[in-house]
Image (cartoon, rainbow over all chains, first blue to last red; front, side, top):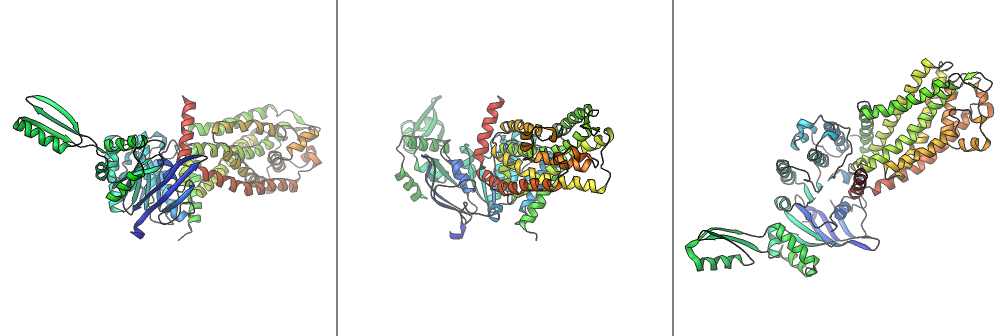
Length: 302
Length: 284
């Protein structure tokens, strides 16, 4: 640990007027780790990310990003950071290649940025490199956002809803890119998403933020162990299909065979998805049953 | 290895050149560049045969010189303001903020772009003006030198004002409202009629703001000697011009960085997203 800790956030608090948006967020990330930040709208995901990016001042708590406090940082620190913004219509008149090449020049005094054409090909925009930004489709623009975010080969990358508007192929390319950045370049990545399958696929660890605090922190498997969700069991018996949901799938299937033996066919046992776990956690949290004790429990199992 | 700031200044300059070039390959930009100047030229062509006071000099030619000064003020204040307001709304500034020294590069680029556009505007008035209007006296090196220093000082005096105004408006459409007071200022700045003929209060108000002094400076560069008799005090008042424009420049350069920093500090993804929501609501 120690030097390996890229993000170290302890008891981060944010208050607007009398409204507490963050009520003590604590988490860490090590070099090369991919973290997904999940949570319902208004849970404080964007606020958290913007504080870590140095775009917003916090009310209280200790925050260390790449070893420095983002409230007091210089441009050298900024050069180690990649931010993928949710773009809208900025730089519409620029050509894709010109814009990327231009952004890259700001990083040159600090580190060797990506070669423009190589990066364009990595994000799959080669055939659009000569186009003006405003001629790009939503998904293509999003890829350009990603390219701008990583052009300086950042040590730490923030991705806010990176795959909105991607078709399935673009999504898979993007996932490959994230794996490549994390594995080959040891880039630490913090992403927010509403796509739980994506979080499960990309993230080493998942943080669930609700009500201004982290209510769960662990891998998708660890989280599903934490939150017992129902398993769906399907089978056929004498040509008829049956479905049953249970929290004790192993016992249920055992009993099923004991009762019917070889007559059971087409057995399918599907465990709860991350989505089920997530929904269960958020619902439990919102109904007030899921408090700080549970958080302790997750920490222990890690 | 160059210092990061020097590198960012170079990047910014290149950015300005890119955007300058883009202005000539984008139809709406070309239109916005040409249209107001065509109108101004047309108006002044109708004023050609009127004369100024007892001098017998063409009012059209005199206004042409004043309009050159006014254009500098418009580019420095209104264009800078519009660009800042629009590019804050659309997220250009946020992107600059996310890049090392990006804000600095952005500002350098903006200065290069506006300076370039101002020169183009001037040429668009000057070139047809020299062909269509009699009496312009831009035939000495001294006259051109005056034109250049008035132009440079005028930009330094007005661009910070534009930056401050642009930082104040979150919504580019509200910033359009600034057009009204500025048009009022033009009316009291002796652009189309000599200010010396105007009531006392108008003279006082007009002489506070840069538009009058830019007009005066450009008249002193472009008109023949002897025409200063119709000016206030019967003089081109170069020292006063340098004094007032210089004062605006100093005030602007002291205030603008603080205002720009405050504006930059407030930029965030959430702020841009909020403006996007509002803008989309306006469209539908």
